[in-house]
Length: 487
Figure 1 (cartoon, rainbow, N blue to C red):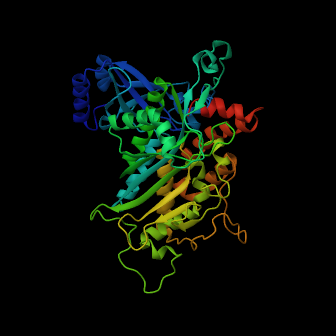
Figure 2 (spheres, helix red, strand yellow):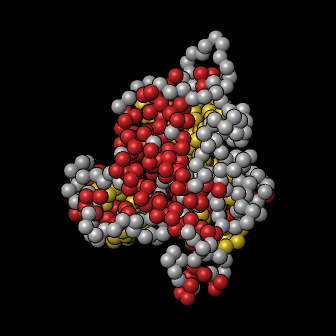
Figure 3 (cartoon, one colour):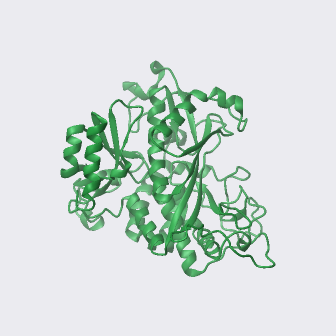
């Protein structure tokens, strides 16, 4: 446990003692972007920094219903998934810099971890490990990914507990029923100050929780749909942004629940007349030597079409954008990973339908912002859903962008009509999770970047989800139990 940076763990042990916490949560982000882990007493937590925290390996093999998607007790599992088999143990290694105390839980500390095999080797199916590897590829080119996040989600008021099916033992099931809820605002009044005032109590809980954890929350806004809100975060490096997002989603759900509210990050809550939620990822690359935005143009051709990337992006940014376009279909299953997400891609809904880019165009999949060589020049990807695993979302962008840079790809002209099929040559975003997984499995950049073993592993888990969703007798009840209640 202490072979890499022993000083970090010594400092963590000291922080646990000084904070006077009674419990410490050792948490790990699973493939679905959800936190799991173990809670130890403070003395046991300090001891565990030397001896390790064990975790059953099947936690890495679960679909969204918590069913194991691999046959771990049958011969051949070791060759299919080396290091796994018969529900053996992995070890959770704490990431000392993520230490925090939880503002909503009494005397409770929290630290994020990464799983390792018993011999200390990293686990290639761990999603944070995948992002670290992608960031290393950028660093080898003296580049660092910077990310700003805009996350839409829904907050509801919990109904009376006596009427709540989620805690009725006679209705217990796998997955359990969803809680009964009410709206916090009626919607259809975008950025309404009146609706914000009506929703202030739960939004204040979100604000206080985020700021107590040191998360760089910038704004909270009322979105168009009933009970829909948006959180915006300041720009940070990609790894920090991903770690922050994982903690934010989990913290907000827990803090709100204790105060009688239910937050969900599923794309389309299972109610009539809702609006889909998206996760808009603003990304750029920074030159690690100069600190300059590598997407920012320093010079311009004398004559340039305003609808070509050359009028907005550097040559490197142009090729990066070309990679995102070329691998748009392949990255979809990593940016929009639930069966529920694909109802969002509708015309004139501020969600994309086609693999296209536009200059400050919110209907396109990729929105290029910052004309004229502005230092905040960036690419906004509007493909993602708020339930996405941030480590995979960001890694998919890096691998697609690097592919575009290596091959010198350039995107087509900017779209002026993002919902117009035109001559039919414009590639479409996959319309189902199955189609997205098909595209992922044959995408060269995703296979080379994440590894073909990871792609097979990921597709196996997500196909189990797709099969159950597509064969469910009641698709809305599936969404209520599997997504609304848990994500």
